[in-house]
Length: 109
Image 1 (cartoon, rainbow, N blue to C red):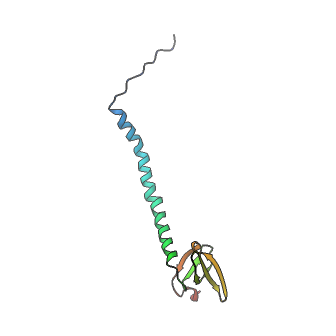
Image 2: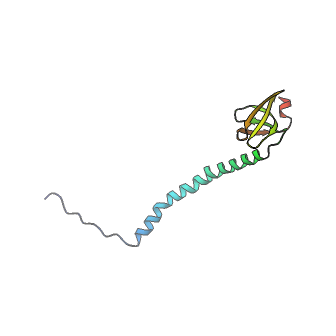
Image 3: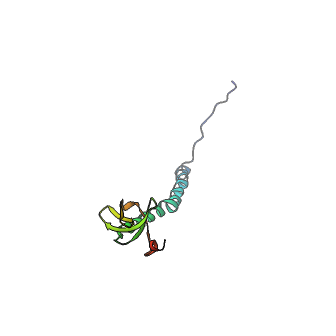
């Protein structure tokens, strides 16, 4: 008595597929932006670090991820021996090498 009848309207057939594609467009745009802002630079940094680790040689001056500075004495498959003082050698994983310093840096400090 107080409630009127509700009738469903017919949807236009031509608008349904376009509405579905337009609703996905913001998600696709967000993914593209996230790729170029976050994912791609991270992959580039990882590739550079991998190349840095592959190029390690005896005599390179390095800083580890823990902040220890030293000179590489021996390079093994997955480990590196770093001399941090005269006669003091530390074995660290290659992945923990953060930076390769220019030659002669440790003599000046």
